[in-house]
Amino acid sequence: MSKPYVISKKADTFFYGIYDAILFIGRFFKEAVQPPYEFHEIVRQCYEVGYRSLPLISLTGFITGIVFTKQSRPSLVEFGAASWLPSLVAIAIVRALAPLITALISAGRVGSSIGAELGSMRVTEQIDAMEVSAVNPFKFLVVSRVLATTITIPILMLYCALVAMLGAFLNVSQNEETNFVAFWESAFDQITFLDVWASVIKAIVFGFTIGIIGCYKGYYASKGTEGVGKAANSSVVLSMFLIFIEEVIIVQIANSIRGY
Amino acid sequence: MEANKNRRAVKVGLFIFLGLVVLVVGVLAIGSIRKAFGRKVTAVAIFEDVEGLQAGNNVWFSGVKIGTVQKIRFYGKSQVEVTMNIEEKSQEFIRQDAKAKISTDGLIGNKIVVLYGGTPSVPPIEDGARLAVEQAEGTEQMMKTLQENNRNILAITSDFKAISARIREGEGSVGKLLNDESLYRDLEATMARLQRTADNAQTMSASLARFTSKLNQRGNFANDLVTDTTMMPDLRVAMDQARATITQLNETASTADAMVNNLKQTTERIQTDTDSPVGVLLNDRQAAADLRSTLDNLNSGTERLDGTLEALQSSFLFRTFFRNKAKQQERDERQARRENVTIKKGVEADTAKTPVRVELIYK
Image 1: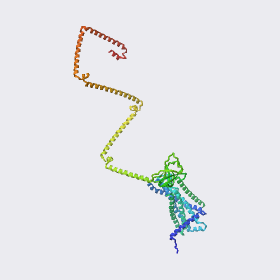
Image 2: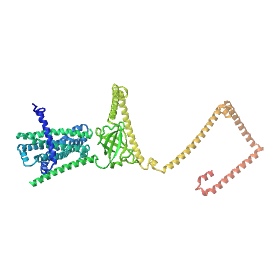
Image 3: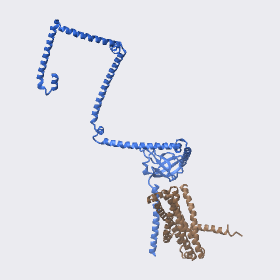
Image 4: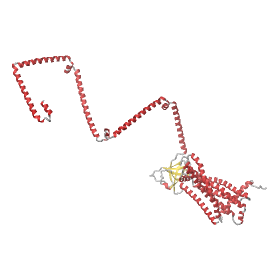
């Protein structure tokens, strides 16, 4: 009698999940490059994911800029290096805060909605209905959403960085009476192209992660209303977890390129 | 529904477009600040130690950022070759004899390459130029110097400690000054005297001020002395004359001196040489007595001679002679008186002019 599981039930489920996810990702790339393209659906998803997230991202970025500047000031003042505040804040925002905040907020707002939407479609058998009516549900639902998050989250990240910098400038100009040009020069003095491109690539990866995890969890949601909630919840948790892991890996790569 | 879709598409397009604008502006800002765009020339410097300099660090010239470090690689045994990108518009200011050193932008700031120096007569650097290097004092050396300073400060404070202890014990001049009551009183008295002196000096300076103000008033002698330019030649002449007079007086005085000396010698000789006629006259009492008796004898001789002469006049032998002589004398006197009266008459017309002379002549 052969063993029912390779390692154990949980481990086998986990590794099967990974295999399934890799297949899912492979299918996404395959479907993404193959016509027909669902442009309208992609635009609609971009509107939902990107445009409608803009107020939330802007507010969060602005507050982050102010708070981070406020909290960094005492440490720098202690060294008599308050003039470094714009550089420090700019490095922090561009390198780490803007992509991470955008990704986390989007994971919460967009990832959960994708998971719940696709989960409920799966539960209510709408996906199955699409399959039988000769509409490719994967292309229509998954590819459009994943592309939308992959495109809009880097854009959102740029907005977030801009607004956070404005918040930082507001705080710095209030406390150190620095004018905009001086702040701008000081802020960008320490930022390199590598920082910007690393952040953009990071945001693209985060966007893809949020979209693909949300779609995967929703697409393969188990039966019942419980499955919808589970899909929404697990898509947020997993995408956040993966975002942090990706963050670490990308920072390592960027630093190795930078020469640290 | 279609219009709604279009609105949505426009919003998405605008959203993506503005996001890309942010990206482009950011990239351009970084590029302009980091001098990433624009034509560049490269320059190379070989350092013994780059102290943590990295590719991308700034290159400064006269405190202005003119480029970035492009590449750092080992060279030779343990030296480091630093390749710098320098913007072309700054190239003309960097001369071939300019030097490079590693520094920091602030006390704990990033490492930078500082280019400095260069003489205007030397041509500017070419692309790929190799710059001379001055090994700047790194943080380690700075700390070493600081350490030495600390030791010196410690030694100085120890010395001060010893000195202050001695002062407290009342040793040395300063110690006595601080602890000795009498010295303090002396100092106080000295200070009081100094105060008085200062008061006097003040009074004196006030007087001097008054005097100088008078000196500035026109018309008085001092002012003339200072301002009148014609007075000096006169004064000089007067001084010359006075000098000549003094010289003459000196000569007179020396002559008088010689005369007095002669007189002195004469009197000394008179006093000492008792054999000389004068000496005898002055000193010899016997000679004086002899002289007196001689004079007495002469006196009695002349008396006798007078008697003899009277006797001769009354003698008939000589009577005619004496009578003729008297007559002749009377004639002479008369003649003389007549001549005097004639002169007086001739001169009377001119009496108003010369009365004194006439009178004298008359007399």
